[in-house]
Image 1 (cartoon, helix red, strand yellow):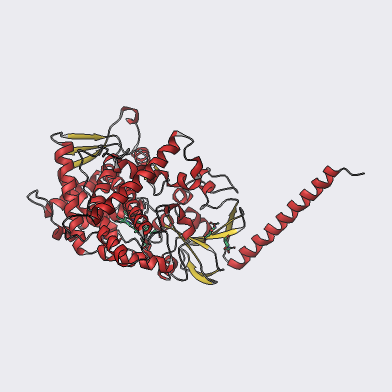
Image 2 (image 1 turned 135 degrees about the horizontal axis):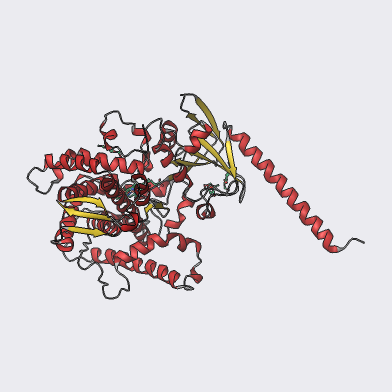
Length: 519
Ligand code: HEM
Ligand SMILES: *[C@@H]1O[C@H](CO)[C@@H](O)[C@H](O)[C@H]1NC(C)=O
Ligand SMILES: *[C@@H]1O[C@H](CO)[C@@H](O)[C@H](O)[C@H]1NC(C)=O
Ligand SMILES: *[C@@H]1O[C@H](CO)[C@@H](O)[C@H](O)[C@H]1NC(C)=O
């Protein structure tokens, strides 16, 4: 008599075989439906959490920051600027990675056909629904409320607040020092970006000297709370509420979220109860007006959106400034070109005005080239809402029609596009002048995404960025800090060390040690 256990075993094995066959057929169906010239297969998706933690293992996962590590390589290998990556777990599913400027333009322009998968952004919704993590009617409503503040009048406010903050850094923090040594440039670019955002979008000025101060009824400063929250987003999504008290690290993340919520509620009530209604036209004003006029816009919508603007405008800007300083320190000749250009406009060493902003074309070219090489947002997720097709081309100018069944995920591969030699000659070279050529390839530049869902804060960033860079370079010369342990490294090694990046909410420079020398 056969034992019960072997029957169970046989049953189990049959189930597994059946499942494997079913998965295989599903896999075949997906690959056939897509009609791509080729595809590669891994167990895990690049978009999954595990796929972002594990190192590269052949057949299992492409590894951490795979699109950053590979840049244009996988497209060059396949011969096409669109690559299909099939993952088998948890269910067979296909993602189209794009580094083709025309196809990307089509995807960003046709918002209804290629929406954002809002599920991917659920990590950003714990303070309430918001403009980044929504689609359709919700998104339209949020965008309509926020858009009017991103205008010329507000840009002037951004410029003035930025100048004030940078001059305060020079006067109150750096003072009479001729040489300022920073172990990591992020320690100044993070506060700069936060102070500007806080002052220009929310009317809350933070000073350099009391930045560490913790106000009464708080346990954490605003600066620390926002920083810890941006680092802790992933943890907050993965760890259930009841487990957030288990370790010191988790308790700190939980505290940061609670603290940030209190800070946001304070900003709201302070502004609502302000004695004299100041003539303010910043973002907070518009959000509050919307909540007063529109009953469907509740307090959760308020905190959700305040939070998302703090998050979207803080790290992206701080990291870009940090990479910019690093590149200028590495490429002294480029820094000299920039310095001479600024000097030709500010001959007498005065402070630049908002009206002069369009004159600083070299500063803008430096930022654009930095954003091309180090785009903070490496991948922009979309999917096809219907059965559709996309034309994808290759180096030789041949075109192929890719069939995209409804539900196919798409990743706009920003690094793949920005390092695509079809559009950018010698893409590894830091060469700001390429943006001064009137023919520069606009559709191959995607740091802010494009189309209706493009970054609403691009002008905000450009305004503060130009004010910061212009003041900084006109007063200080930036160099890489010399450290004995790296005395013998080559330029290539130094460049690799200083520009090393790690994943985060946005791509993050690991350690950029700089010296600022007064000119
Ligand atoms: C260098 C600086 C910045 C970069 C590289 C950047 C990049 C981006 C990108 C790539 C997107 C599209 C995200 C997606 O589709 O998944 C985006 C959206 C957005 N950004 Fe920025 N951003 C920057 C600065 C800012 C600033 C300063 C603000 C606010 C003051 C801001 C607010 C937003 C908002 C609200 C959205 C969502 C827009 C929508 O979906 O309608 N960003 N940004
Ligand atoms: C594809 O996108 C959907 C959201 O539209 C998501 O639920 C799913 O996990 C994604 N699949 C992969 C493989 O990333
Ligand atoms: C920089 O890029 C922006 C697009 O993000 C473009 O509007 C601007 O003209 C560019 N400027 C320079 C000088 O490169
Ligand atoms: C991928 O998975 C999502 C959600 O599980 C599904 O809606 C979609 O149809 C799948 N895509 C393909 C190409 O099978």
